[in-house]
Image 1 (tube, rainbow, N blue to C red):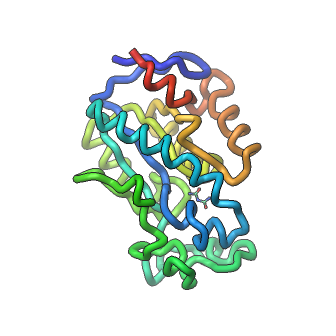
Image 2 (tube, helix red, strand yellow):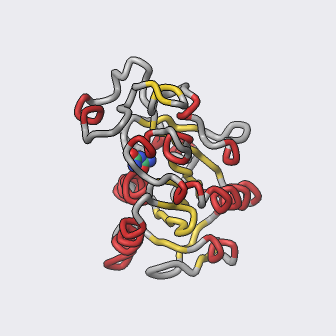
Image 3 (cartoon, rainbow, N blue to C red):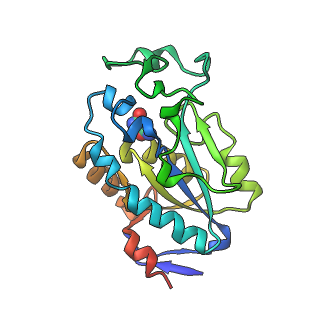
Length: 219
Ligand code: C5J
């Protein structure tokens, strides 16, 4: 077992039954011309965590911790995109429209690819998810259960949307979850801060948080 100095208290895990889930580190959210940009966000905040996420992935691979990746993406016919999701707000480009990196949030388009620095390796599963949570309408739970995973490390974007939704879904399914604070980011710094605080409030009601350096010191 390894123990991390986390908040609200120490997080203990066995690398053999732990998986890292890297959420939506895809060009659509991180590079100019994607969905995040079309919604009017400054994507540079998200791009800044790529080096830390890369180190985190390498740290996990080096310890035999399974690594899984997710992408928020829809079928080309958008049959899995609720019209309400597509209609919402006033983005410059809607889901399915053609942008500078191909069709926005559509599986198989260049913008839907994970950024090259974080490219999945070998047999690492890539879960394509039509919702914000990675458990909804995906095989993630089956993959984790088959592998005997009980503990999840979480990273990715955005902290208060897909990361938090996934962490809550995982928590309700009985997983002990640790969110790596500097390996997640939001377009809104105050939303990231609030999310970290609400996750670890009330004795870790959703789970734990810790910086990557604390994970590296786990003994
Ligand atoms: C959003 C995500 N923010 N990956 N997706 O639409 O957080």
